[in-house]
Length: 163
Image 1: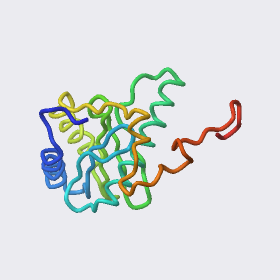
Image 2: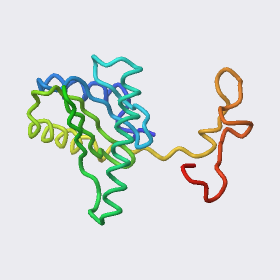
Image 3: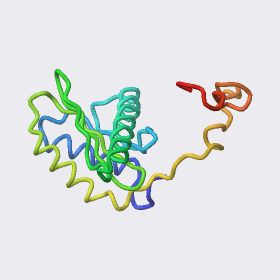
């Protein structure tokens, strides 16, 4: 959960401030490590914010795996260069990340600096506890069982490839 000193509205305001302060930044999302959007800047719809949170979580997880495998330490920031923009993902507290999407003309150093500044400002107040299996298996609002069968989980046989 979000730490007691910051709520989603406060995060949204801080993310809006980042977007307005750095001209090349198109939008920003604060997310849990498992990909849930905790706060979004104005200008990104709910669906796109949730999608960006999921993508950013995946990139951050891949970078953490590379850091562990190559004994390179903790991930500070991940950057993906796209044809028409950049995606930055930075650790922002325990179980929390900051994702920023910027245009192709972005000043990469300025964005990295501003992200680090925001993380220093709020990172110690943010924490997101990992979701437990019970959270994932909770009944859906429509009363139907969770996808994947009666217990909501699909498991591959032990040793199965790709499962």
